Amino acid sequence: MSGSDGTSQWWRTAVMYQVYPRSFADGNGDGTGDLLGLRARLPYLADLGVDGLWISPWFPSPMADGGYDVSDFRGIHPMFGTLDDADAVLKEARDLGLRIIIDLVPNHTSDQHPWFVAALESDPGSPERARYFFRDGRGSDGSEPPNNWISAFGGPAWSRVTDADGRPGQWYLHLFAPEQADLDWTNTSVLEDFDDVLRFWFDRGVDGLRIDAAPAMAKRGGLPDADYGGVLQFRTVDWDGNPHWDVDEVHDIFRRWRAIADSYDGDRAFVAEAIVNTPERLVRYVRPDEMHTAFNFPYLKGPWEAESLRRIIDATLASFDPVGVSSTWVLTSHDETRPVTRYGRATTSSFFVADGQGEESDLALGTRRARAAALLMLALPGGAYIYQGEELGLPKVDDLPDEVLQDPMFLRSGGVMRGRDGCRVPMPWSGSAPPFGFSPRGVQTWLPQPESWSELTVEAESADEGSMLSLYRSALRLRRTTKGLYAAGLAWRESPSGVLDFDRGTALRCVVNLGPEPVEVPAADVVLCSAPVVGGLLPVDAAAWLLLPSR
Ligand code: NOJ
Image 1: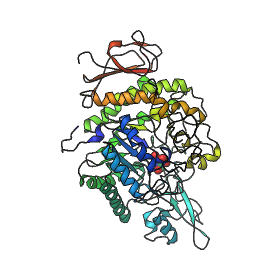
Image 2 (image 1 turned 90 degrees about the horizontal axis):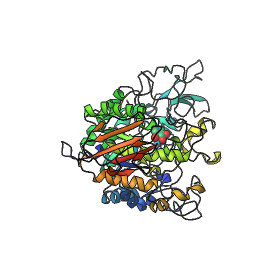
Image 3 (image 1 turned 180 degrees about the horizontal axis):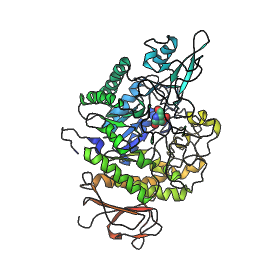
Image 4 (image 1 turned 135 degrees about the vertical axis):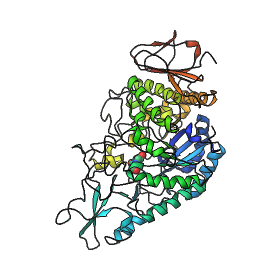
């Protein structure tokens, strides 16, 4: 699709595949994914039929939060390779027709970033400390945190530093782990340095940037206490007027960045990771002079329930369509419980990562629903995101031993929350036993893979027409080749309770059965289904794509 300004505006309809580099493919045989491995698997992604990749952070990082604690925004983690390897990924992806978005983590730096190291070595009130939020503590001896803010990973959002003389010093703010110190975005040297970071990656040819934790980047002046309404849990929604989330001044930063993106060839895009209170608040992030698109968290987090899904779809379209911004649809990520696990539980909605902890999952049921959910997501108008392994129907690995868990959420909650590692287990590519082609035989992967994944490898699923992988491949191919699909809006048909039934213009009809009984569909028109349509009946927890008879 061509935009009015002559650009392709590829992000309006693209299906992007999220690569978590540590767990995608190991090219150098050390048990950890890397860019050599990613390069070797690019043809797999082109063949899958996605339009591009979103690569989770690949920068140098002490890995206190899986790479979201960056110590150099212009480099590549040696564990993943070099800048030359990154250039090769960009070039080879481009040759295969794949776009690349990388993950910028601007709200915070690692505590090992030279800026933070310099801040610790400098005095209170120094320009080095002014890049972050260093404050004196409350109470006569400063032993109380400067305010009541809490961290997303549990506990207070402040840690106290020890001065050179060994005495307790100031406190610094970290809305995530203590190893992730929040930057003060009112500081000119922070702003100017990041302008340069954007140019550094745009110059290398990235097509866009995903902006991590976008609503966290501005804080209300004076850092007043937050009113958490008695619930000391990082919720990101239901937080009206929160002084450290979705503060209005955050938009000044994105306006500045948009001008930089626009100074390039016009085809560079920002994607907001913005979980905010209402669709109206979210739309502010994608105003014409801010970001280009945003992840759809209400959709990701919604339950497997027809009325609720329909409400979320309608609310999404109602807020994005009028401002001319394309919607996105997403089921999961490196932060979320995998769909086959979530949809197999009694609670099918998701609440950050602590959802469903300890709850049994019926994986056969979850897989049936995840197949249907894939067809629903890929039939909706706009862009979509697929997280690596989703196309294989991988479950969350719920029984990783405690000693391998690395998520700060697990560590900071004293093990109460098991965290996200179970969704980050290395991809199974081939063979019948771990490491399943992820690493050379005999190598232990950084998180252990379950023996039971032998039927979920790319190799096994490629040979099985009924596999999740075959379903994703077929859906992506049809999505690309169905004429008129991208431009068509969505029109609901009347349907029994529990059934979602809509047309995309005259291009495609999608029926999803979340009700208690099979529903009738015109079998002759079915071009793709998540479960066999027998005798004209679409089973429970199944979806079908139909070509409209008028075509
Ligand atoms: C969102 C990222 O997706 C998540 O993995 C990370 O822990 C936080 N932002 C903090 O950067």
